[in-house]
Image 1 (spheres, rainbow, N blue to C red):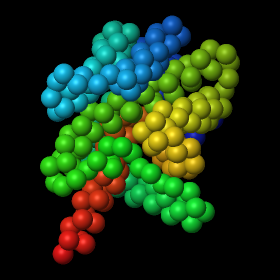
Image 2 (cartoon, helix red, strand yellow):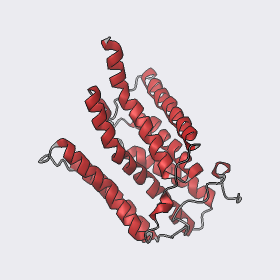
Image 3 (tube, rainbow, N blue to C red):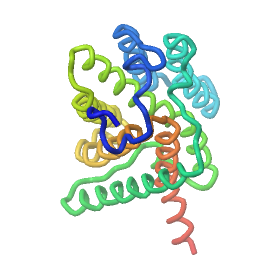
Image 4 (cartoon, rainbow, N blue to C red):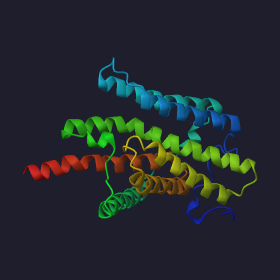
Length: 250
């Protein structure tokens, strides 16, 4: 392991694209990807597609969110988009479970702490609207693509910032630390509208949860692991109203 690598990166290699493995993206290409993702966030926040049935509108928006940046990345990397993914192995299951449990502890802990100091903990709009099994399944199906896009809107800016810092001569470790902190804060900020601008909750929960997922990515260099972990974590919390409803109903 090279001196400029962290210990947890053992056997995971280097990050894709930012340093030329297997294909180096230019700063202009990185900026294009980041700007496209931010433009998509604005479109998602403002477009309603009210002329379509809700399920179809949601599906079309999810396909648009994932398809456009993935298509651009496919083009920019000369079709070497596979470097973003690694095959999942059975031993990855334990890693995913560990990180999901860690995120659950932090998520519940931050909620309890905020309530103890008198802060409101209003949740995600999508989570608040979960009513019954059908509602939960609808949210879960939406999350399958939307949470993958959330991984893209976090990890692509992270790699882009690392590429920019590398071009400026900043060491690899410092680049990783700075990029992880900045993009985690950006990720939290993008969640503010969904959480009714609840700054304390977003910056004591969402930002720290994103940091955990970024550490998992640092360790594995595999977007599949961060995506599955993210999906399972959100699925657990969105299921809580359904579970509590069943418990208190009986």
